[in-house]
Length: 387
Image 1: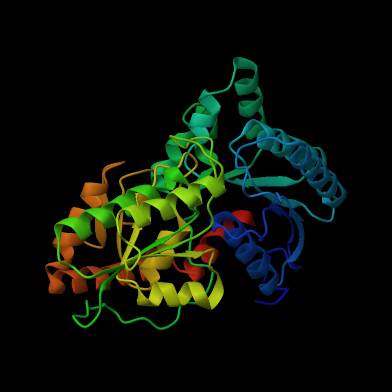
Image 2: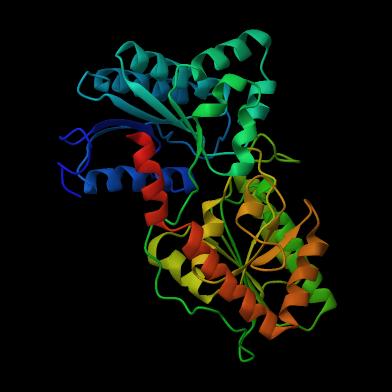
């Protein structure tokens, strides 16, 4: 798209975009990076303010360093909120320090006469709102009313803003997508009898993301079946405020390896660490099942599930937040209850026992990705909303 096509008013629209850029890589930072690149490719004039913190091992904690980073991001935003940039896009936070930053940016943009669209890359804004004292709830409502558009990830997540009925008409749904072009994948995978069934956990290794449940499910399968298995855990060990038993990342990694040794899983389980680029794609290409039994407190619509769908992995995940909009239970994967590793093991066991069913589910997974979660569909939906 050239500059004269980028806006119905003639010249290219100009955007001030505030959000997290990698590193580190996670769903929100990768989606924001993709949007910035796509807008520029389509001929838009964009100024980008990176609000990414530099310490991913302390999720949810307010430190002096993070406070300084937040202040600097507000200053950079204010310097960019000139009359030239009339359209503002902000990926908003669901924490009190993050809200203070968002409030400052929204107020600056509105004082400059800009139109503001905010994007909620998670599923817990209502939980955040209800946890605040009365005065903070007033500030949140007042700030949100100053926006023109509120973007959420799923129809299931519209209700996050029911606490203020005046916001209803400005809410729009923009699903996440894959942020790269997938390597060619078969329309439907087949389980190969000449190699083990391959399981993949690909996400930050946070307790509430469910990696411990997956590890226990692998141990259950080894004890109760003769199914040959290989399980790969890929990601960074991180701590989170909602962990059931919080511990430093190094301790969590040590306990992971101790569990593997205690249950004699050394020849079954491999910890791959953080993976990106071609290494990630190879894992997706060679995995049969993707496992994400998450109950993570900010979870919305995990991009890692979309990645797995694009490569035909059968997905086993929890019936949580927007995941049922992605995984059709019994058709493209299985939805299980929270905190039930035995259900994960049972799902793998039952689907593996029916190779034809597995192939049909794999095919349906790719078809659902192509229908709802491609990069082109995401951009065709979000760009007109931002205009």
